[in-house]
Image (cartoon, rainbow, N blue to C red; front, side, top):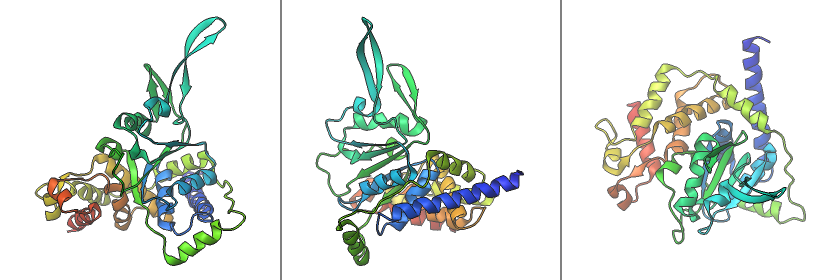
Length: 328
């Protein structure tokens, strides 16, 4: 098979698998089409997702359903203030074997393909930091021994934006490790009725696996082959650099932002834009692909100044200003 034929086969596999998983998840989850699509884009790109929304909107159900559709090893951790790092990554346990006592590493729930960190901001910073190495290097280090995680590996975390009692805001270093931050909203009237009809019957919809971990890895390989012109890379860099309060930044950025997005944000935008191009039937990235992924990739990476916090400035508005400034 020639290189061109291999590329076409990879693109066909990408679109077909994406469509199958999306359809399977949508058979259970109602009214979150954009969220489902963005979560799938992040998964194909090998990224982690932070889902933010008030309780009862189906964030946990979405992750559960995604794990069923992709058929990967799934674990859930309910984050609470008394949760310890060892409860996440594992710990050394003293065992008695043939009359000899030895330390053996007992793996924690992080050793899986898809990890649901439910209400992640309820755990202390010490426990939250247990995920830093796993989210970036896909490995765990305990007692000077490093243990690699199986691939693919994704963290899907949820948090409630309106409750502050008993919560610990995620540090910037951990927020930056999330590929996308997605805001889950209230369903519309018709979707609300559909939810009641699907969940109020005697049998819940059954989600069958339509893909596997190897499919996700192959989709990621296909994405990396999508070309991006130098002009579009320059535009992407302008958008990311435009979130920093420099002289060339929009006035709102200068007034309300203390620190802008990191190069990791640019990497996320580039990968997600490639996925968007394939989903739109193109094998090249366009400017609208970059604009489409800018909000979920940048909104959680902006650190507002005191003035921005005091005036309740929304990061989404600042990202839009950075995009307009880059176009100008």
